[in-house]
Length: 442
Ligand code: 5AD
Ligand code: SF4
Image (cartoon, rainbow, N blue to C red; front, top):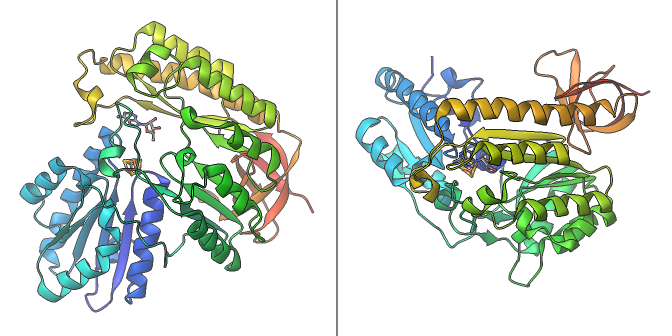
């Protein structure tokens, strides 16, 4: 049971890397104010739920978890429950929480993250509920004081929000309009990270390709500036929209020595007709052309993607075009999703919604095609020795360590000592669809 004299916290994070990094920032704010991490949820005096609203099953899980805290709150009035992230950015959710989940103490959104210490102070001082949500904050948040999950790798925000308005997606409504940080401030942050021992950075944005700062610097300019920072061995980024993928960015994969040979390039559908209805602003041919040019510039680049099946109006023929695109590209991996209508987005009101059983059947068939490609790519690596950045012990089996190759492949390997944070050569002995096994080369 919780001990009310101890200031212990626990953060539950759903959703994307953007949220994971927001949670690191929240942890930093708490620890600056004397809070310490709890071992688990049960022992925490304060819990933050950092939520995602990108798909419907996220909603159900969210309300389920929120409901479970009622008992906890009744038994321990000093327990503090905070809710943030993309869920409370929706008015419908704010209403729902006010009407049915009165035990939430602090409700704040993605745009008011930095207000959290003040909200918490006010809640502790007055005992009153605190709510602060803004639809779109024109002010860029300060990037400082995060408590990073790892010592050797770090997330770095470069843009916030999204201007694309794909017709299925709720993000432009929950994360606001797109804003870029300045190249200078990103470079400064990465220099500091390098001086603290970080060797890998992951640049985050809903669409990093459209990064453009007040001085007119573009995303390739930023990559070139970061490539020269001593100590930074690996640079990753996500996510990039194929419509904005420039020739200069493709050239970066050829020219920059620290840019990882991996790109996450969400295609969403292989049917130009569906892509148009999704408002993606590229078609099948243009996407395939981008892939071709990327592979020309960087032959062993790993390509991963996101795909949605069962978008309103998707016929069997449209779906088969997606399968054929997957076979043609041969992705290294893909996140595949069943379309889920999000209230407030255009596609939720499209008349021709697809029945659930059809969506599930398509998802299964799509996954088979994705897995064939992933297996073929991975199998080709068997017998090779690749540099792996070691993240730590495997969660499943603590005799093993885990890390990633340059191409973002998950590698499990036996090691004689703890190599966490180092880049070590691993001989790949067995390569499967979702992971590779190997041994450290002496
Ligand atoms: N339904 C299903 N999948 C979605 N995604 C975004 N919105 C939806 C939705 N309404 C998927 C997209 C995106 C990934 C992060 O989530 O594939 O790239
Ligand atoms: Fe991330 Fe989008 Fe989910 Fe928000 S809705 S947490 S931006 S994936």
